[in-house]
Image 1 (cartoon, helix red, strand yellow):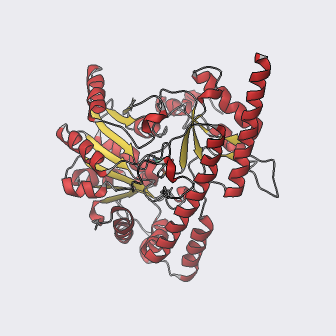
Image 2: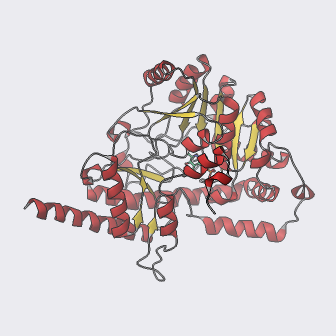
Length: 446
Ligand SMILES: Cc1ncc(COP(=O)(O)O)c(C=O)c1O
């Protein structure tokens, strides 16, 4: 029964709005996943940002907590819309030590069901329908849905470059870029209300420096524009000094959290988003948060958050995990090492294939330029290459469509869902396929 007359016009809009264009193939590929022994001809979905690298360590810990600790009484009842106080305290303490490297106040935290819910609520509370949120391109495709579906906020993709060489050594978003975006938006009769950057970046893995973030923050505060830094990949960084990749970087900059800048500037226009989905690899447990000194924002968040709250049982479990700093230090070290190893497997092959990529400092991705394999510089050619690559190799990449960038042929590779051995096989399959393409082109020229 899919007669659309039975649902509202809002329902009709939702019916026609897919979350992302690669989900259908993703679910198909997920039914036939590669396994060295059980399914050696299986597929490699490398398109969705999951991080399975150290799940066995975390799942063992979760099982131990569930088996040995008594569930507190507060778990069974209603709790604050901002999150239970003991969980917010554990989160503030954990992020203070591991991410911000300064004390954080749990009163400035609002917890919701994953970064997605936090982004949607922030858009609803900070901007009005028809206002514009600006994202330096390329940016996470689903931001469009998160800010538009309920809040009705428009996405503006701010183009700072065309060829990815320009961002090899970090994001290049400048005040001139921001001024231009503001002029464009105002010429169309709209308001530039939000600026969002992801740090480390999805999909490029670029890192903003403190000075860069401060300059942008000052510009935003002066113009009453909310500036939000999404630090959902803040603790999955790469060891750029590893001899296998050190030469790819001009500098070995480290991640610096926006949380210190929020405190130093003490402004109602600065906010940080975070979630446990990527750093801990638990996207399915739906734990996200916002940090803000804007108390009106937090009160509104509390009042609107009831449909998006994190289950108290999950809050209790994660409070226990995050509170054990020794465990977390070892776990995050293991993540750092596994991430660096997987990253090296993929970029080693990209170098052999002479496929340009942006050297990454963090996140779960490599943003690579396969444009030379397209028959034309068009979206149709990009989609055709992507589908053919999947059909011929079983390797599914994230297509560039939706990232808001101008260059066709850019693809995102997620390298955190398979171990090194499996990743090597996936990259070999890509190598054979691209070699067969080159032979076909050569034959047709002859
Ligand atoms: C930049 C960014 N923000 C938000 C999300 C969504 O995170 P969550 O699963 O916590 O809702 C993702 C997931 O890929 C992401 O890359």
